[in-house]
Amino acid sequence: MLNDKIEDTPLWSEEISDERFFEAINGKKFSHVCTAPVKYDPSWSSDKDVAFIVTGAQLHVKKHDSRSVLHLRLMFSKVSNFVVVKSSWTQGSSGLSQRSGIFSVISTSISGKDQKKPVVVLDSSVFPTGPPVPVQTQKLLKFVDTSQLCKGPQDSPGHWLVTGARLVLDKGKICLWAKFSLLNTAS
Image 1: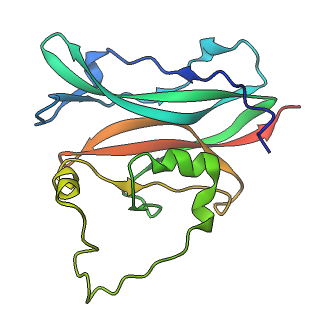
Image 2: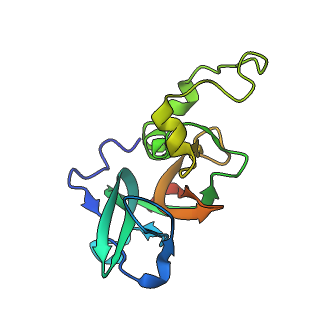
């Protein structure tokens, strides 16, 4: 539906340097997390009949004075002749979450592949605390919530796409919230 409407030149969000959004965390590589919402910049286009959807993401650490701050950057693609008609923020602790990668929300939303995944049921008597994971992943799970946020064509009333995201600290863990939006053709 969007193949011929997405422009080839993506735009990256700018990092937020507003210290009000820097939350302290006990990390070795960084001391703070930037929790500001990352959304498209309205100055990217003067056209009213465009929408910007998330098509990529990066985490990076940058020095701000004496602090090392973890930032989320998003890559946006411009979709011509479409407008956002409804948006909502979804967090990992909602009923939509499942175990998976932190940025799979973005690729799932764009590709729509989540609906084709087979359902796997694990017997809790075999894995009472969940399936085994590599040791490095277990260390990461202490600091990062790896739940997946899913919203797509199966969620009424239509095809949801990611149009923003933010990092949030919840009980000492870094979590991802996503802004899902419905697009409609511009008249």
